[in-house]
Structures are given as structure tokens and as C-alpha cells.
Length: 295
Ligand code: BDR
Ligand code: CA
Image (cartoon, rainbow, N blue to C red):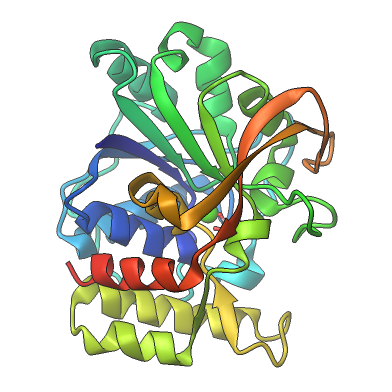
């Protein structure tokens, strides 16, 4: 299944990327990066470092340095000053590409047969919005978009909104209102897919580098979020839901909701029919993720 990952690594991005790059069912042609959890130069370097740990030569195309018309608001309190919670990763095996994310996406989608490439979106949607507005013909050739973002029936993690949509509400509105074949995976689903100490042991017991690195990342996530989630014995695995949904849609309960994105990035009732994952088979997801990370 050919796909491109758009990402801002990011602790949970890193786990999602390790899973996706190693999984034989996905062919990740490239990663595009964006400012989000941390600034663009760090998310770009991190994507290359994660590919190196996965042993994959995946090209990385840097994208937007800032949201459309707003200042970046990094999440250092959750992902740490290096975006990866201080977990050791190797240096990138190749330099970031000179071609920027939007030019790369437009060129690749135009050259490939129509509706053969999926976009797996783990971050604020700035790059995808720029693709939609600057290259609408190329955007129409995307097979489907699967994006982590939003909070539908639940409170957000940035007031009413969720981080990826709140970081760039204008971009989120462009992408979610564009009529693309899009599945949104909001906090309503991702908060139910959690890792606890026993799950970390399961990952470590595989003795495989992607699984061990993921255990270290989740451990760092515990430390980084301790002050925000005192007493909580597990952490949600937001971004890994995206490649898992690409490969195992049967583990998600998908509904159509009529929504729009408001000026804060909150999802409110609106005219746009959007496929939204509102539930998960958490045990099934944990098993599939552990298997994939042990590849
Ligand atoms: C989303 O925000 C980021 O902090 C995570 O990487 C994830 O993409 C969760 O709200
Ligand atoms: Ca992310």
C-alpha cells in the first residue's frame, strides 16, 4: 500500500513511523515534515533519525515552518526539547531533501496513477492545506487521507480543541472541508488505545530495535507528562492509530459525522460529512502494534 507520512516527531509520531516503516504491508515512499510538537528543523532531523533506527532509506522533505497565519506553539512539555523525550536515536543516514514537502507531494501525486497513494497525517495539517490550495489537481489524486486529530464528543487537549487541529485551525479547515476521502482519528478513539508498564515489558521482550526504542519513548512520555497526568498508569498512543487504521480498519469503529472546524480548531456541528473513528478495539491494536514493531 503506497503511502506518504506527514509528521512532526514527536514521541508518538516516532512510534507510528517505526511501525509504518518496518511493516511489510506499507510502502512509505517518503516523509514530509512540519512545525508542530517542535520546530521544523528538529522535526525534519528527527524523521531522518527515526528512519535510520528503522534501517530504512526513506527520504524526508521539509515543509511548513509555521501554521498558516499564526505563530508556532511547540509542545516541549510533552515531547521534550529534542521532540523525542531524550531517547537516543542514531544520526540520519541521509540529509533532508532539497525539494520541499508541497512540491514533492504535488510531483509524486501527479506522476503516480490516480488514487494510488495514501497520506498518513500525524501532525498539524499545514502541508496538506498548502497542497490543496496550491495544487488542487494533485490533491484530487490522493487515494485517501488518514489523519490523527480533533475531539468530537470529548474535551480536547487544548481547551475544546485537539493539538493538531488547534495548532493550525485554518489548515485543518481547508483539509477537512475539501471533500477528500478522509478518515479522522480523534481523541475519542486514541485516548482508548493506551500503553501501561506491562505493555512496555511486552515490547522490550521482543529484543527488536524498533520495539525497544518504542518502549523507551513511551517511558519518556510517562516522565514528560507526569506533572499533567498524576496517578495515571497508562498513556495514550495517538499517532500509531493512523498506520494501524490503514492496515487494520476493522479495529476501528468509523461513523460519519457532520462537522466543521471553528476558529480555535475545535470540531463543531457543520455541513461536512466526515468519517470519524469513534471507538477502537484496544487489545487488538496493542497486539498488532507489538507485532509490527518486532518486524
Ligand atoms: C497529537 O498532538 C501531538 O502532540 C501528538 O504527536 C499527536 O499527533 C495528539 O493530540
Ligand atoms: Ca504528531
